[in-house]
Amino acid sequence: QVQLVESGGGLVQAGGSLRLSCVASGIFFSINTMGWYRQAPGKQRELVAAITGGGSTNYADSVKGRFTISRDSAKNTVYLQMNSLKPEDTAVYYCNADITTDWGHSMNFWGQGTQVTVSS
Image (cartoon, rainbow, N blue to C red; front, side, top):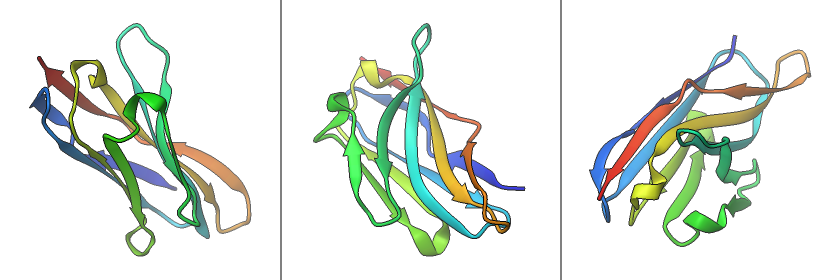
């Protein structure tokens, strides 16, 4: 059973920073692309940032220059450093990972989500 567990959300004032973490646990062969998505009330879930196993990254235009995604493969962990936060960044942030299981199947997993609230 693979689990993704996020942490680091909270309440912050506009202009502040937060760092989200997501740890993958369980039995698997490898972790491929990991990413962060967010969903604000009444809106669809959207990609915020993603990082491949080789370290290539991509970002939503709305967060470029403010957010940085990184990973520690040895710890099966992905991070999202969020700086210069804006009220419109308020959402539930979800970790996502493409994982190759120990029997060779590629599967996609989601974390339970962590709330980020940015006050104006």
